[in-house]
Image (cartoon, rainbow, N blue to C red; front, side):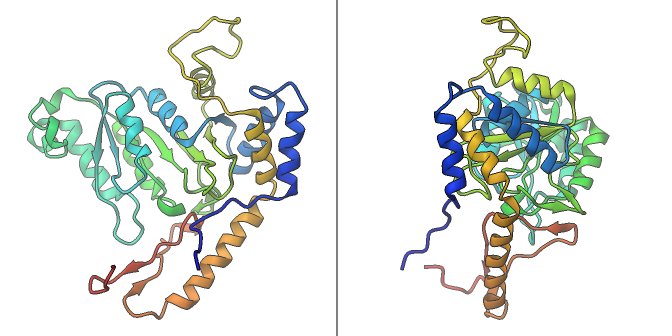
Length: 320
């Protein structure tokens, strides 16, 4: 018997929503995108949401908005999908990997604080954080610009602690929430208290899907305007046709994807609750199995968003 790791949960409502778009002239930029953005912002609890073509695209635009450029340093985690590091490399910046908490798999705020302190001071203490390929260069000449935490497997990272560090060292915070839609940290939905931007993804294995797509959320009007320009080839919202104010990208969300997203967002509690029931089913059957450790939920996690269910095995367990 083959059990799929994930599959999209689609109903007749999603199919009808997409079919309706196909009967209109709007296949790229249209009213469904604006409605999806507004409803998503309301769901998360922020003022602004910007639809993009993927979570990776959203993270990339977040790095750009954070002022990250060639040779700059960005603190992040190595325990994530490769896109979290790729978006830093896109801007020819340097990912500074710090270790994760053993029980949650999320970036360790204590190590983030250590890295931020040392990298801000420069010298030998800063050099030890650098990747070997650049360790021989002048660490003091490199600027620490941002921190990119990831909410691993749908569990919120300790954002209050990370936010305090970011404020102390004047760092942009780009939250990779691609696996964490609906998760709650201290009673607040992930993204609701973002200092800069949080990015969600809608790939078919996520809690909800638009096929391909992502969403950026922020309370900053200046970043919202910049994101809308960058996703649309550098054209400002009120620019004349073919007037491009900056280097931009084709990171737009399709109208059909937005329609699918609207239908899925209308079912989001159903989708999240179903995953919660499955997780509880596994908990009940695995919690007493010798050598198996079920997922740990931090005290700050008031709602886990079950992207995947990860079981940790004791070292003596044969993994073959």
